Amino acid sequence: MTSLHDTLMAHVRDGSVPGAVGLVARGDRVETAAVGYVDVDRSAPMTRETVFRIASITKPVVAAAVMVLVDEGRLALDDSVAPWLPELAAPVVVRTPSSPVDDVVPAARPITVFDLLNSCAGYGFSSDFSLPALAPLFGELKQGPPQPQGVPAPDAWMAALARIPLLHQPGEKWLYNTCSDIQGVLISRVTGRPLPEFLSERLFEPLGMADTGFAVPPARLDRFTSYYRPSGTGGGLERADAPDGQWSTEPAFPSGAGGLVSTLDDWYAFGRMLLADGTHGDRRILSSEAVRTMTSDRLTTAQRKDSDLFLEGQCWGFGAAVDIGTAHPWSAPGRYGWVGGTGTTAHVVPSTGTVSIMLSQVEMTGPTAPATMRDFWRYAAAY
Image 1 (cartoon, one colour):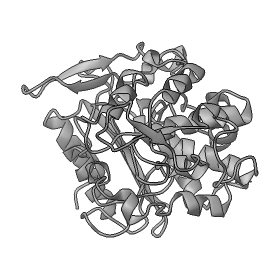
Image 2: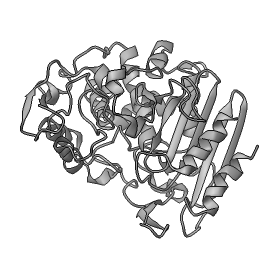
Image 3: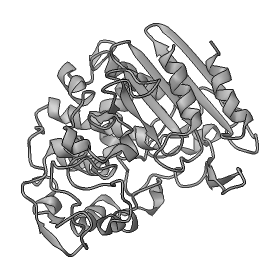
Image 4: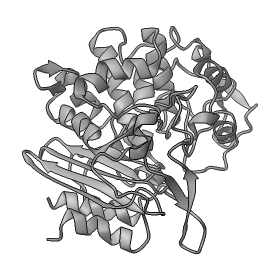
């Protein structure tokens, strides 16, 4: 069997990524690798301490924070979100998914906390990006590739959201991304505190996630990667963001869908907490029931129908996908985790006690995972 180092290095050599870091742990057995460089100029080598924009593997972290509030009785899964998000107290829904944004009907029932957590509130991306109701998500809400300095503050963002109709009735269909951003606002409204402050106190500090947040402080910018996207058919890379760019200052809108920066070991601490049924050392972060709820299949067959553009045969828990079969060589029943559009992926497999994390710095060109991730997943599955 090849090593994790060689698995990742193959993609540095072929120019897919300037560098990458990876970790696969099963019980007490841990293998890590850091290959290549933090940028195309090879200004510094990748290390285990390198900081990355983790994009959508932010989602399970924010879902866990919602479950902290459920554990405390400050929220219930079947609660309407209206008391905290009055902008969503009387939503309207487009008559059909392809209807114009002004052809609407009232929502059949309120949006609940559960709807936000399993991404079935009616807001988000579908497999057809041409639908009229999706355009405002990209234009007004800045959904899509993370751009933290371009998104309005939470109250203004929610006011804009209130003007956009739902694509489906609450509870009817799984849609991607937007519900995680709404979760971040919900946490702030329920607690009366900014989302970064609550996450720091209840998750990051207890778990020792010292490098995780919505911006990189000046003293740590030397450990922060540049961020790239493919530059067309030539196979090159163009820089989308520098270390002193959009993540070097706190954003007005801390995105629960994709705004965090983090490191290999920080996300590993989060993953180990999930495998330990919500505990970290002698401290309980989440109840066992909360962990089981968020890492289990929470979609009906009807809800996930036509969602294969994103899910590829998987199901969805709270904040991440859940394997429900063996559709791929890397599949494992109960495998919980997700990918980030900035080139990141992280999963836990409760049945085997496995955590697997790979972080790179090249934007995905679509919902299909690149070869770098798929080779990493195969390696982790055989570990």
